[in-house]
Length: 352
Image (cartoon, rainbow, N blue to C red; front, top):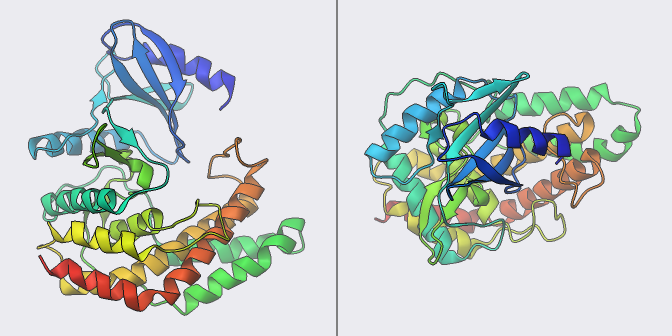
């Protein structure tokens, strides 16, 4: 992260209603989208400060504010927006949107989830889905193209044509072609399913666990809250939690059936709202999610305009996104081999 961003963050933090002056600030987490900092005040308070990626309009804060209030009323522990000194939900400085959130103590995992944690975390996600299954909230901020797989694949196809004859094309064309060909043989998993309120990005590091137990206590990064099929959340969680390898590790990519079994058991605890059609769509949704993310990484390997660079691991965005696109396609191939086992375990969600 650039020093100028860190310096600006220190100034911005004091624009919000903290319990005292900010005296310490350090980068937090490994998020791909927002720049995130842990802020400590002279009074000992701890907060989360974020520079919000411009893909999100300021109206996203209105949605977060409304739904976190609803979550608190329903008994969930959740982050909450801390207003600015003038009472706004966020602060726009030099065209950049900043916000402060309350901090939830606990553990955030980047990898290595256990089956017990997977069971507890999936139960927590199912409880969230169950609570808001019939909620009629109309979102102010709607991201066009969110998990719109046909649109994502069309963008990859168009991008591949744009870069024909370039050095990037020489490296990426075969992989892009393989992803597009695989998608052409994969029935759409969720276009026909009911739209409910979902988290939208339940990767492993967006689940907060208790400090001294395997209990899942909160969902983090609520920018992606929206109305979509719950199988998108289930499949995306499975893609993230069940992969035995790092997101950029092509050789190690493997879908762990034991972890998925535990997830299915956890989700079943609150899944009485789930229809048989939704349940049957889960295996195909996992396939589609892996292909979709592979396509997004491949597109950004060409364009280098969306995902943030992890400078600790990769020299540039092309190398990073190319590696992650290969790894997601490798995960897709492994999921495809294991579809009968995944389908059998998904059926257990109905056995409450």
